[in-house]
Image 1 (cartoon, rainbow, N blue to C red):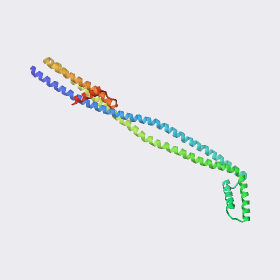
Image 2 (cartoon, helix red, strand yellow):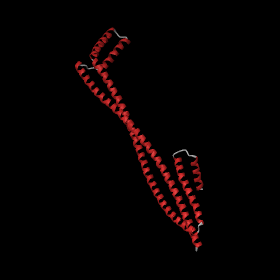
Image 3 (cartoon, rainbow, N blue to C red):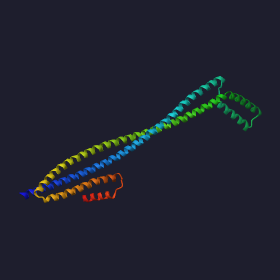
Image 4 (cartoon, helix red, strand yellow):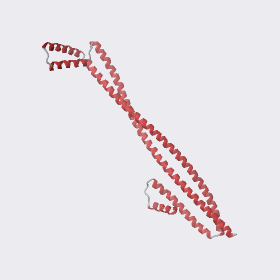
Length: 288
């Protein structure tokens, strides 16, 4: 009866140990999966931090571009106001001196007649007529001198308005470009958070599986200890054998814990010590 009972207990113990080993292997696999997920989460978080840094730079650039655009738009408004004032002055002078011709056109006409007299062979009578015309034109030009100055200012103001508008439009286009770029980056940013949420949910599920495995492990372990106590009473020599087995399991557990620390160092690119290398060798030996 004692032999039959001992045989049955040994079979039960072997079965329980086998179950515990299988549970432990499953747990290791789940923990590796969790570590992989954590690594993916860290990579995504690094990208998120990069986006946040770029976001700060984006807002600074956007603010500067808006300031430049506003400055040039303000210049345009001021120049347009000045141009209106110059146009009003032009009308007043034209009305005051009854000027019918553009001073610039008068100056151009005077230059052409003088050039004709200097470069062409003309009769004395024709030259007298041309000189009389020049005197009249110069008198008209003199009377329109104030208008000439105003029209020069008017042309410069018109030119400055065009240039300022071009600059304002250039900054406006730059603003549109970085806003469009930011819009695309925001889509990628939101996608990263979706990935992050998904990975965290998967991690949570894996952790629940590990918690359940731990419960099963504890249950089988309690049962195993009960059987070991029972068989020790029947066969005292088995107790020493079990102690050796327990020591081996404890050594494996310690190596497993230390190996996790070493793996974390490797992921974080921390230099390994000689002791770390010994731990990794011990883990490889246990897995063979």
